[in-house]
Image (cartoon, rainbow, N blue to C red; front, side, top):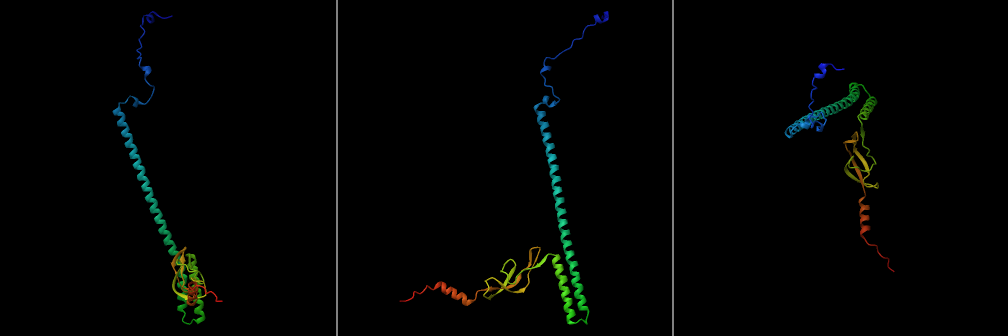
Length: 207
């Protein structure tokens, strides 16, 4: 049962806005922003995105520059190492030559043996450096590998290398020096006969 005080206490009135039921339930305050405020907020967001993109571009450019420098340093180191390895291989060649020349009592046979040993050391150094001789003798003339300095009449097929004056070399499949060669050409008499036979009409036998 309620007390007399509770019966005499007036019930508080609760004010209810009838439009509250039509307001969307959301935590985004931008719904209630004006058009100017929305435009300003969009501009700020665009500016922030531009700054972020600019920072990413600068980072990307810096990474590319660092990669380029690193690759350049690695290539330079590789070239220096290759040159050092080749130079080290040539030291044995120099040692052998000095040894042969230093011994004044060497016989011709001993000198020949020393030169042969030197040539073998040099061939080994070339092999490690991927230096190879150009195949020329009896080969078909190749302007990429051979340099013709003369022609010789021969029964061999025209363009066949008949003589090598100076050997050619390649390094890692690239030409260091072309081989200087003489190539075959058809004999003048045979060429003249062939030309005459091709230009003179056949003679009909007389009855």
